[in-house]
Amino acid sequence: MKLQRLLSLTRQAVDTYHMIDPGDHIALGISGGKDSLTLLYALANLQRFYPNPFSLSAITVDLGFGNMDLEPIKALCSHFSVPYKVIPTEIGKIIFEARKEANPCSLCARMRKGALNQAALESGCNKIAYAHHKDDVVETMLLSMLYEGRFYSFSPYTKLDRTGLSVIRPLIFVSEAEVLGFRNKYQLPVCKNPCPADGKTRREFVKTLTKELNQQIPSARDRMFHAICGGNIPGWPVTEK
Image (cartoon, rainbow, N blue to C red; front, top):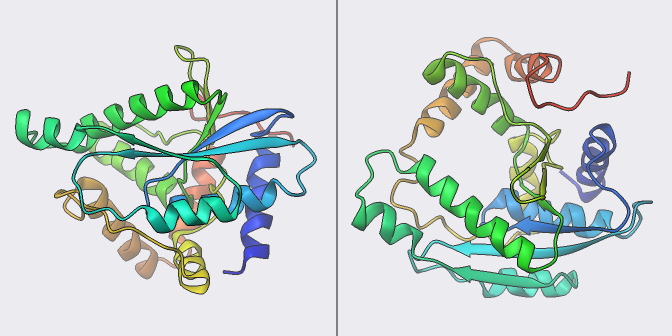
């Protein structure tokens, strides 16, 4: 995927769900993976011509596993003139050593979000951008249906009442295959995920299941995404016809 298509899909999502207002200060959650680095490219370049002026700050919540070389990410943020901050935590030790969680992902996600929210507020941000893409939307829906018995997926735009922050997901119209292509074309400095649970989660199972469904039923993933967008899920913003 070329940068031009990434910007086109990002702007489509931002305009469809009214994600960016004039004067917004947006925190980018940078995990070091391909998705968050693609989001950095998207918003840093969109910032140059989008009619609603906005500023950016990049934040990495370090879970404390070690072995993450963040210098290339720091250099990329500097290239885009985006301030970059690393928040050290001991979330990894708490989950895997102190609590020995059998299903660590849910607690880890809550703790990471809490640390990111606090860092965003301290940086003067009013919005946080997550790098969830189209495949994440579909996989979250299947996780919810299979394990919770409800039709649900996260919203492209969410207001967090307790913090006053809003969460936006500008890559929601971008497929994971396109993100992979973008990573390869632009040689993004991806950091390997140091989490010991990486690749062994329910989400990984559902990711494989989605691929199999799409192989058996061509365009199944796109149809599921369309069903989610038009499914009147509570919390989803109403789009203009």
